[in-house]
Image 1 (cartoon, rainbow, N blue to C red):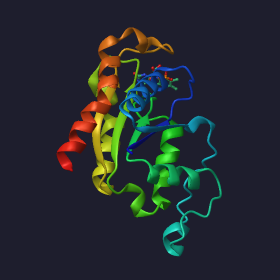
Image 2: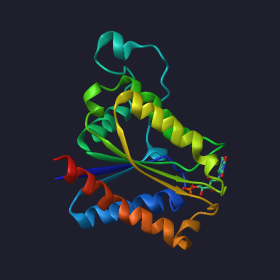
Image 3: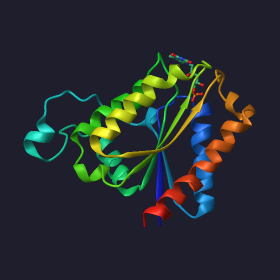
Image 4: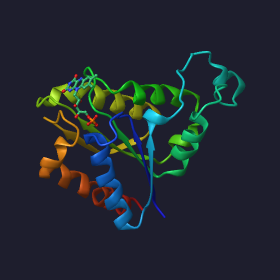
Length: 187
Ligand SMILES: Cc1cc2nc3c(=O)[nH]c(=O)nc-3n(C[C@H](O)[C@H](O)[C@H](O)COP(=O)(O)O)c2cc1C
């Protein structure tokens, strides 16, 4: 069974990021996929200290926090949803700290993964999301992970504002079937 896990970097429980991620997860569940959701804002994930102990020992990060569990969740899932609102033209700190810690994860964590990016923001200009998208595009090119879909919700400021954007909701609802079609073409 295909497994999809959402990692949300939004601190707003009923915010736009989580609404879109839940929409994707619901359509995944309807498709028969196993689903999981992680609220990074509630997770205990410390900064990467660049001590390089993970690489020197080959045993992973020496920090004993929630990142070991996150690594397992990443490995178990076939598809990840990474969600973050744009904060100061970048991702939220919650998602960035999590991303920095990928440095200490074993290579197999990243094998054959597909990613859906979910990026809400107040601005209505595409370029405002370009750093978040570019950062993940370049990072995933580097580690060999495919970005299968990108959902940018422009012009949403208040929590839940995206609920009045039917075209974005439709994009989120159709994301899973889009990926499923790609998977069928591959196997
Ligand atoms: C600290 C902070 C920084 C933000 N920076 C930007 C920004 O640079 N560009 C933008 O368009 N929106 C910015 N926003 C607005 C959020 O991206 C927007 O409210 C988004 O819908 C929040 O998503 P959420 O509902 O999942 O929390 C910022 C919001 C906060 C709280």
